[in-house]
Amino acid sequence: MKRDKISNAVIRRLPRYCRHLAALRREGAERISSSELGKKMGLTASQIRQDLSCFGEFGQQGYGYNVDSLYQEIREILHLDREKEGILIGVGNLGCALLQNFKFGDSGIHLSAAFDVSPHRIGTEVGGVPVLDAAGLADYLAEHQVSVAVLTLPARFAEETARLLMDHSVRGIWNFTSFEFEAGEEHPDVVVESLHFSDSLRVLSYLIGA
Image (cartoon, rainbow, N blue to C red; front, side, top):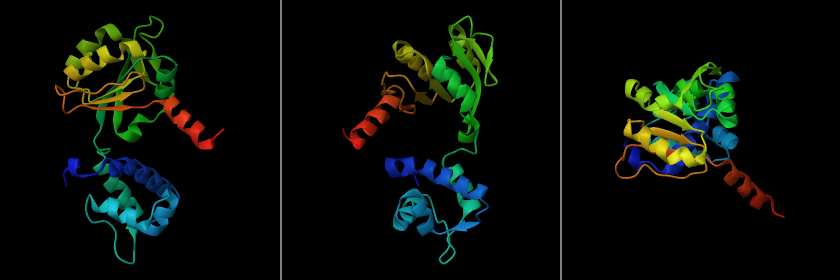
């Protein structure tokens, strides 16, 4: 089924399926029903079946789902079984935290390099990833097939950097800056995923009330 026929809500639930199934695998579970999986995820059994039916036939009547098989199937749907080259731009506090603690490999990303302007960072390694001079970013992009870029640099540099990335065929941008942007009509195949920690915290503030 074509991706554009699947709702954004379903797509954004897929990583949750992956995460819960991974936990079940670690616990040694071999199978699970849609009702049991739904309880773990706060969804109905009907919603589980409806979501999965967007991608094919999974599970058996009276048996449920094979945990390992469904986990592997969802990894394939998310293209996590195909490693993509990625880079990180901006090795400040947040960039360092991601390099040192975030398991990019679990999301199918191999971080080949990080970029920064600080002489104190250039030439070092953070989390096993070499930090290169940001002045050489364009040359690096021309020589490597980078699919994903993580932006953790100051917001004032985000747009210019994003345009450079898109012009060099980077198809996915994980944007942690406060600057919001879209790929635009000239780059229809590029996807920008922006994360704003403050937005999430402000929603929490609203939900807990005064």
